[in-house]
Image (tube, rainbow, N blue to C red; front, side, top):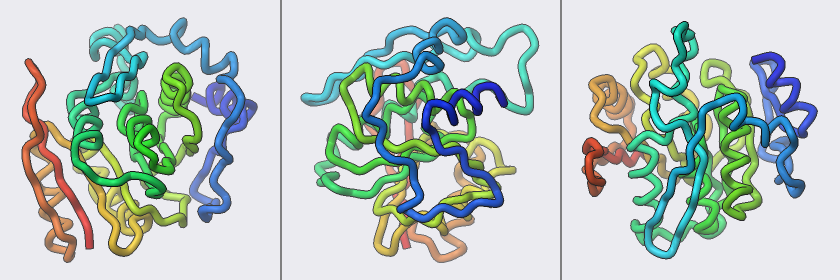
Length: 249
């Protein structure tokens, strides 16, 4: 992990930590150079396959791990399970929602939490949003950048940050997250990130495939005065039903 973080710093990423607070102006600039060698060698370190996303006029081809078995290895790190290289059904469902929801994304300041391979944030950028992608896993940001460049999508900012010590003071019109409420230990930190990051009048969109811990998280938000709307998203063949939660104040 440390080697990867040093590579990211050398490549121009901003690595934020508990002792640093960043305003919107402190966010890293949009990268205009092709991915560095530390990014392009990801496929040699992680089993990745090409995954197609097609919705409306938008066609993307992304690299992602085919399934959890391909990346978990013989001795999995239980503290840091390798969920991040996979495009989970919730991410695909959220991305399709962004394309079909008829919302005007042009100029919307948008934060993606736990971006992984980056699909929702890349789609939002293609629709005109001004996106910051964040993840705790350094390699996830590398993969998200590689996928954006492969598809000709430019202008995304990326920040490595921890929900438990959230470093950004920037506020966003929209917050996007897919399949991030599966661990109850992170519910309170995630709620705090939402409190600090969502602009007044903004909306956060969470996609979840019906995992049991999701309901207590959104119930907690409702108890604290947040508005929460839920509905099922259109289901892809063989995928579980994914629920969209729209959260606001």
